[in-house]
Image 1: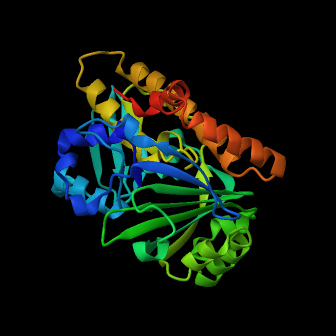
Image 2 (image 1 turned 30 degrees about the horizontal axis):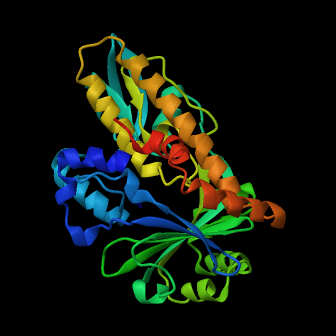
Length: 347
């Protein structure tokens, strides 16, 4: 995963800057390439948003989980519990679990992801995310399989209706590979989790995608480990509870497309905002949290969808125009401070 400086600065408050260096990496640039011929279009220096103690970071999801478990009192966390019912009375929240046990709390924080079952339980209706019309295919490869790329940078390959991202994660010279490709799937397939775990299906998706890939990139997937495939789901609207002490975090609040690499960062941001707000003695905490978080989420959602459109342009004339514009804007500090800086300069 990628952690831009807005989330890395928050994690530093609990010692992330001292986390094992071999478990993370600090890329210098984002290199943009043509998926068709491997030609480099331009590069974006992301160190301009760094500070001495806060840097753009890439790492494995498991490494971040390991760090958080160590820092956030994992012994007090109960796993494998399912909420069956939520009762609300006199500003207190009673949680009834599937095993018929119950607990009563002052606050309820719902952070169970894009498929949040707790959200459906709270609103007493089935709330489902929307299929984005795209698949993500992810795997891990060794640095020696990427000799044609800079080992210090994130590489983004742009192609018709598809893009590929490769970036180092700091463990045993490993690189994360992610292909995002447009794909029309019927509801039966979307509901069938085993469909996306089937190795033959993943292979078929890759073969369809590889029509767009040049020879260097096709060969990459002959040396990929831990290959996984999953459909991308997003939210179509936010759901705000009536109760003033119930809060949604991360994808449970609103899931955005992955094309701004802000999924993890926004979850960390929302948790940090809620922590600060609950620490205040202010009856307007609820409105303050949701007004700030929804406004920021909407902005990032719009830019993520714009990136998705730009990355997947197929018309040759528009591709030419896009590449020219990219070469200009990656060196335009005023534009970058507005487009990226507004997100990365979280306070």
